[in-house]
Length: 500
Image 1 (cartoon, rainbow, N blue to C red):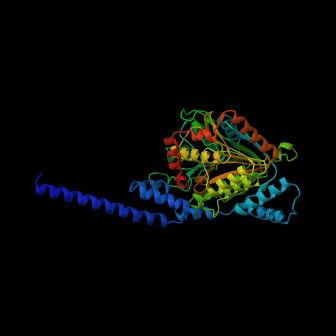
Image 2: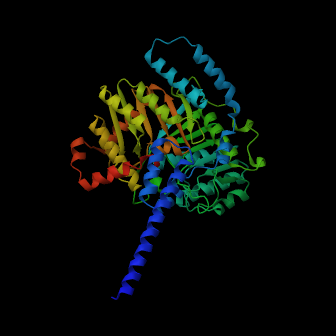
Image 3: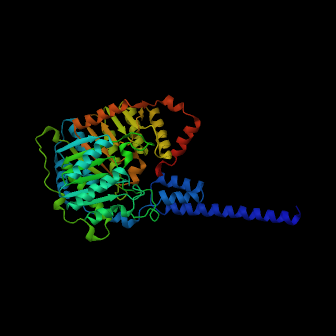
């Protein structure tokens, strides 16, 4: 090669080198600007800086899906929704509890403090007389849900993260079209990302028959508004203002165990008859009205949605006390996470948790550590198989850490475990949509039922005991015996915990 050719090659490499340096410098400046221009907690800030700086350019594609917050105008639509008819009742309850003499019984005192927490955080109304049924399989959940919908005469309100265009999704849609044609007011809220593949036209038949359907706070196209965060993860059904459903199931064939990847699906869902339905109804109406840009499409006639509850209060199985608590990125505090912390910190004997995703923040992690080292029986059950690889490896990492702290870790073997339950001391329990992870605590819209009932808590704990038979205890020694490569993947995934 002559001198001229060598000089040209050297010049080319110099240009490429300086071009790469310029791209990296621009990427670093853009990363700093992008992360710090929006208010977020310090853990998420450092996690996003790590992603954007270590993965130039491509990191910004991840950020477009996972990092962008909801526009302020959408959050304001949620914040602006008042608490409807329950506000005065909650205010009366607050005054009653504040003026109540300190009870001598420790269980009553624990109930009182927890109830007051949710009254303060979320204006959550305590309902004392509820009949609650628990469903753990898709077969029984869908059978009862469809039966109740078929019997509806006035209103059906449905809000789910996922409503798939598959066999069970089409059965539900057909049934809703039938009820709308009969004159029942039918409304459906769904998350546009969770219900991926379902187009606006999927509900055209329902709309033609007088029903309503809309994606929660989002555009109809995920190509335009492609955020993976700030999703509507709630699962709410109310029927005639008398019956309500809340829990972990969505609408899709996989929740019937018909998808080979997951196998049998194990979840926990509640059917509520009683005053708790009012709280579910109110949450749905607030979400619906926040979604509707046109005031004419909003619900303004509340009477039909809050009828007198038909329940025999003298029946012994109709006395479950509960509060419905919701949380989301529009709230100043992480209501459900604080509720979990309250339950954990109130425990004196045992804490049993089921969650598909175990990615706790430091506050929850430390509370579980304190409980375990204090001699409290802490047990956590997670799935043995992933549905999101990074999330599953991060779950394994935290399970390993907690196992080393004395927490008993179960890997559920019989299919996929999707239940989100917390049970404490045979006294209190929580069932709902919120996982024990950053996403449920900070990023998504969630709803849980917090239950104050010895028999119902005992029933949920018995379900946990039955699930142990289909689970495997993973000891610290077994975690230590995992391959270095697997442990590296767990540790690496944990770095992104605040944004998973």
